[in-house]
Amino acid sequence: MAELTKEEEDKLAADWAAMSGDGGGAEPSEDDLALDAGSTRVLNQNEIDSLLGFNDPNSRDRDNSGIRAIIDSALVSYERLPMLEVVFDRLVRMMSTSLRNFTSDNVEVSLDSITSTRFGDYLNSIPLPAMLSVFKAEEWDNYGLLTVDSALIYSIVDVLLGGRRGTAAMRIEGRPYTTIERNLVERLVTVVLNDLSGAFDPLSPVEFKFERLEINPRFATIARPANAAIVARLRIDMEDRGGRLELLFPNATLEPVRELLLQMFMGEKFGRDSIWESHLAGELWHTNVDIKAILDTFEYSLKDVLNWKIGTRLPLNATAESKIELMCGDLPMFSGAMGRKSGNIAVRIEEKIEKIKGG
View (cartoon, one colour):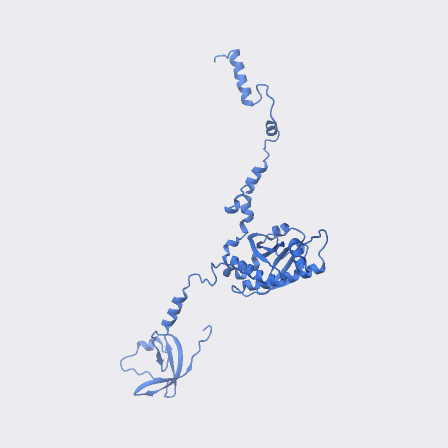
């Protein structure tokens, strides 16, 4: 083997030093020290958001990815319940009229959004102070939540107690709501719940009954924190005053009418043609059917039947007064007495044979 010269050895040593990262006398960087110390790299915030699926500002318009997709996998979008949006649109129109009568003022009600969320996340997102009304759907045997924010509370109190128009309602923060304020808000909630019952009437008659008024969200828990719910946010404007009102329905509350909410329009029958059904029912009345008149029935063994010959007589137990049974196929229909009319044998129907349930 040929020996390396001094120059070749120095060059080879320099190459090894460059490959190992400690050659050339350069000081190691902080990233190199971090890699050498723990052999791990710390993720920055953008990389963490990308992993969790939070980094896309337009993620609402597309399918979520990462851990967010797993978290939201149980949520049911309100878009899968088309009739629910029709119900809330009807509620907005009814509330505009009823609140004008309630406040004797010009009231405009608008629907801001309908979203799906988890019940625990919604309670944590409520801006306090606020009043939370728990109501019960009597026919569905479950509960819902109506939230009135602070701005709407003071606006309603100001309007009902004769506040001047054109001036913003006075807010006094840092104190609990008085009995007068609670009673006035309870009257407002009653009006909204009556309209909500009317909005659901064409779909399914239901009565929403006011249960209690809470200030602390923890006392207004009507479902488990992980349960999915649908939230409708309404905006109520009274000239220069107003606020927000939110309606929350847990998915369990809407389950009894879920099939109705899946309809694309009111009265949808999923492929059934009422015109064809009416035509078919009408034509059935003109259908010809064969009716048999049974004089008597008896049983014989197969051995006796095989011994029958031409001229064998079969005695019947029927007499002139015996009941005759009329049958359509295997179904007994009527019974009556046998006689003659115009030279023909006839049966006078005397009673209808009722079909025995389970028989």
